[in-house]
Length: 321
Image: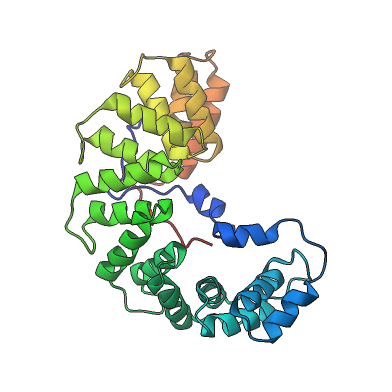
C-alpha cells in the first residue's frame, strides 16, 4: 500500500472533534460572574427589582433560570425574563434571547427571531452577538445567505478580539466568500486566532505555511503550528506532524516520533495515520517490527478508505454558545 501524503485541504480545516468543545455556553465576563457562589434561590430583592421593571435585574433573573445555579433550571422562565429585559434594550438579554430562539430553549426554535435579537445586541457592539449574527448570514439561517454580511459582522467581532470570528473571517478570505480572495489576509486573521490558542486556527495557519499561501513557505513554521494544534488533540494536525517527523520536513527525521503522532491520530480514526502507522510496523521503523500490528492498522485504514484519500471538506466553526 502506498504511503499517503499530508492531508491538505482546499478549504481550511476545522476538526470535527472541536465542534463538541464549543458546545458549552460561552458568556461574557459580566455574565460569568453571576454564576459564582450565591445563596440558593433568587435573591428576593433582585426579584423585586425585576418585577418593578429594572432591566438589569430582569436579565439576571433570566440568567438564574437559564443556568440553574441558584434556582431550578427553567428555560421558559429564562426566556420570559430575557424578553422583558431585551425589550428595554439590555444587550446581554438581547443576546441571550437570540440564543434561546436559535436553540429552541424555552421558546420554539426560530432563526428569524434569533437574527432579530442578535442584530439588536450586535448593533450595540456585543462581540458574541456580532459573531452569531454573522454566522446566521454565513449559513442562511433566519436571513438570506449573504457572505458579504457574514464578513461584515465577523470583522466587527474579530476586531474586538473574538477568536471564533477571527477564524471564520480568515476562512472567508481563504475562500473568497464575501471578500476578495486574499491568502495574506487569511493568514493574518488565522494568526490572531491561533495566538489565542484556538486549535483549529493553529492547524490552518500551519497549513498555509506548508503550502506557502499568504506567507512564505516555511516547513518549520508549519510544524510549529501543527504541533500546537496536535497537542490540543486535533487528529489531522497529529497526522501531519507525524508526516513531518517521518520525512524530516521542517525538523530532524525521527521515525519513533512519527509513530507516536500517527498513533494519536490513528486512535481518533484518521485513516491516513492508521495506514502510515501500519507501514512503520511492517518495516520496523520507529517501532518494533510486527506484522500483526501492521496488518491490524492497515486493515483498519483499508476499511475506512473507500477510495484514495482526497482533500476533505470541512465547515467553519459552529455557533458560539
